[in-house]
Image (cartoon, rainbow over all chains, first blue to last red; front, side):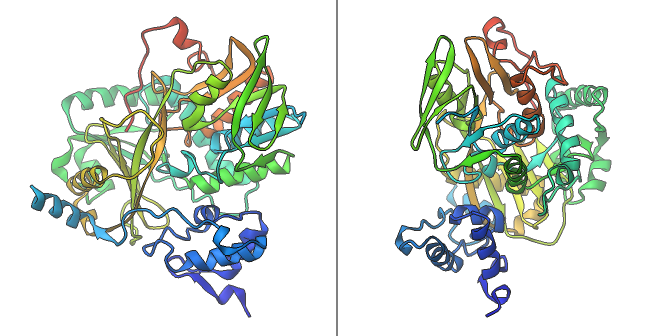
Length: 93
Length: 381
């Protein structure tokens, strides 16, 4: 198994190898990884990589998966253009 | 546990102070932070670094910091990319009053050795062609301002400090500070009790609360400032575009996303960092008016972070009269990230009784005791 060819985050092309390397460097929370790898910062907001990385952290720390926190969910739930937002405001008025 | 120096706050300011102290040969330094790596203001900032200020002190702090950023990767021996980009800040003048003020600002900046210049609308449009020509009158531009990745910069300081023996402890919150005869003797956290020789308050949005634990009344408050990020797109904008009167800053980062922020004049003074509809609406209106071409970009995420505001919008650095071993680095008013190098240098100099390389009389907390009339920095969004 070539860990550098297994993609965990499709928004930013982050691999299993990238995640394992950060774990070895001592970064053991999803928020740490988000800041250094951009996982969870893309358009899907960690709906793909969130639980995969949670599982990797749980394995690394030898803790139950439900005890591993995932990322803070932020607005917007889906991409909306700036023009659409401005149009929406006009419609409200 | 007996240690030498405890730094409260592991953001970029605390990490820079830790690095500079360790480089001066100080041993037994511990940095505690109540949350994860760059959870506070550092990791929530707009990632811009600029030297175009309206007070001399801020100009000098910013220039010295940029000079460090230019060599930071080599000095700190950091393997990863700091994503430092010097493509300038373009600051738009939209009123005759701003035009007059900005010419004065440029003169002051030039006297401090900052290569900014006052430019016409046509010159500004040559630098950022997608600007709405009706949205401004003229501009100022400084080509050596730019962008730096806050997470990577902080990690670079932390790794360099660790190599020099500094210990960083995240998820450890300060609960009490014990003082005796105008000195801090102990700091009690959720995980340990530290007997200390010196303590640094670099707690960002919570620096007032940490100050009060040590009976030091720091005249700062915190307020939420929001930012949004768009999807990445092909490179279309080099400089940060900023306007104080229109209340916007907007930059395309090396990753390709645009980051943009504005302040809310009605925001409450507290520690809330939630996202609001109001920000999204106002930001979309302002951005599409000044930079119409950005209207087609999708917003993927928004967040908030704390500005720690001082009365004159300049940082509070250094010693405290009434608490001899307690030192402060706070009140950055939204600009702690870009001032981090000089913060670390100056605060570590003061703690070691070394002469400081710049005049710091305007930065001491003492200025608020004896003065009522401040030179307030107005170049703030």
